[in-house]
Length: 205
Length: 105
Image (cartoon, rainbow over all chains, first blue to last red; front, side, top):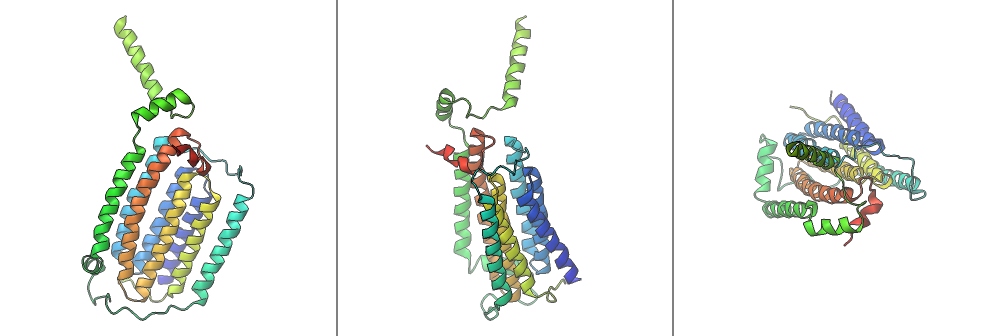
């Protein structure tokens, strides 16, 4: 049974991962990413990390992938990408070669190495306690300062995102005057303007 | 209770290594910034899987707490990274990773 669960979720993980790096359409890549994340969540459950499996599905599949899809749809970049163009000559083959070398090295370490280190004493698994209980106990004792620092990190992230994504009025005008090709023309805006003009004409007549 | 003791941790670590390799290769061969970003997520997931399998092997919940922090950092990273990608793709909808210089100045 365990072997079946592992094989099934490993296939999900690897199939999703190959879907991400080989897919042409970004939307399909994002959906393949969901497949991988679910596979990893199943593996978490089989490793008795139930809380992390739930967080994995909620945060990754629920929030991060939705954010990806939102950006893809918002910017309308869900066109298939031409994978044959290779602006940097030989980049693809060099990338694959480096990837194979990296994979061989990592697998060598995993298969030839032995896991050293005794079972932990300090943060040992409390017998019978749920993993949520144990994680929260550690989080608010041993890892209290890192935990508080992550809240600062999240605030910085939010402020940075707002600053980066905001369209500054003065900058926009400058770009418009210089090279109008570079600005992002939303087709919906043009349609709205046409509708407005039509409505104004109707009112005038 | 589901116990994974029948499967050696080497299998989980090997799967993590393969997943990390796929992510790194994708990061090297793809040019669409959004998909490069998804490859970074794949690599982060591979590391999370390794953390959890070590936490299970060594009976130490500290590994799971680390995964929790990796999740938080990944969320912050996605927010800032996608903001950069949005401001890049706004200027050129077909932009690749080479066009990041458009954001200069």
